[in-house]
Each structure stands twice: as structure tokens, then as C-alpha cells.
Length: 218
Ligand SMILES: N[C@@H](CCC(=O)N[C@@H](CS)C(=O)NCC(=O)O)C(=O)O
Image (cartoon, rainbow, N blue to C red):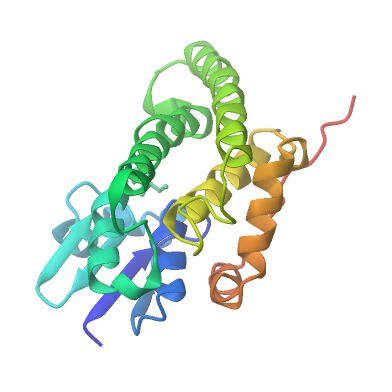
């Protein structure tokens, strides 16, 4: 099998993982355990010197970065409707995908891994607190975007990469203390996506719970 996806459970690699299943692709999923540092081994760094998932390998081609992988998969599986194929709808979808990837996603990285951005504990706490406020606002922006859609899915009539990214970002919010049910449109979209057999296979393989929010004791 020439197509391989290197993924970590619950990470942003969920997006191409779901896209591959939605496209009905034949591929090999390769588990990378981030908590065991498997993304820092010489073998993995030879594949992606940035030491991150996702990585898509197609024969000789090694593709990193979710946006590039999404466009690659869309070109390889055009019938799957992973993104709108043309017109302003396509531009808008890429606009949203870029925003998810370059704004919402890195804001969560500041919440989840503040040690990457500050050295001492107090500075890390400040980074985390500031990023959490920003992340809450960004999820509200996502909620408005989901509510404003005129078709069943964010990219149109077929489920695709935008829906998978929305699910991932909402799910991450649960780890940060954001109850996903307080964002009802995004929550409903995520539940509908998770219920599709293709996406359910990914959730099962990655052993994910959709709602990881736990209320803190008052
Ligand atoms: N801009 C990258 C972000 C990839 C990324 O943040 N990957 C995370 C998982 S969600 C990762 O591998 N983190 C491990 C690390 O950076 O040490 C993309 O679009 O693929």
C-alpha cells in the first residue's frame, strides 16, 4: 500500500485521518506516540524534520502541513468532496481552513503546551490564561461560522476536512475546560460527523471520546 498516514490519537492528524476514511482510500495508518517521544526519533525526523504529525506518504512523496495534505487528498480523491471544488465556495473553504490551522490551532497549542512559549512556571501560567481567553473567543467565532452555513456541512453537501477540523478544535476545548455543549451548532455538527461510519472508524482507531469536558468542582 503506497499511501500512509502518520497520526497521533486526538491530535490534529485527526483531520487527514478522517479525510482518508471519508474518501474511502486504501492507506496504512501509522501510530506515532507523542507522549513517548516517537516524533523525535531519528526515523521520524528523517521523514519530517519538524517532528510533527500529520505526515502523509504517497510512494516517494512526503507531505506535511494539514492544508497541503488536505489539498493533496482532495486532488487525489476528487469525488470525495473533501473541499468545495470551485468558485467562491472553494475560496471561502480554504480561507476557513487556513484560519483554523494558523490561528485557532496555535492558540490551543499555547493553552496545552505553554512550556513551549515561556520558561518559568508563572510566565507559563500567564501564557496559558491569556491563550485560554483567546481560544474561548475563537470557538465562539467558529460557532457563528457553523451557524451561518447554508448546507449540511461546512464545505457544502458532503462532509470534509473543515468538519473534521471543527470537531478536533471543539474536542480540544474540552481539555481546556470548555463545555462543547455550550457551542450547540458546532457540537451538533461534530456529533453528526462522528456518527458517520467512516469517521466512527477513526474515532475507534484513535480510541477517542468526543466530549472530554469535565466540570471542575466549585
Ligand atoms: N502546522 C502544522 C501543525 C502540526 C502540529 O501542531 N502537530 C502537533 C499535533 S496537533 C504535533 O505533532 N506536536 C508535537 C510537537 O510539536 O512536539 C500542520 O498543519 O500540520
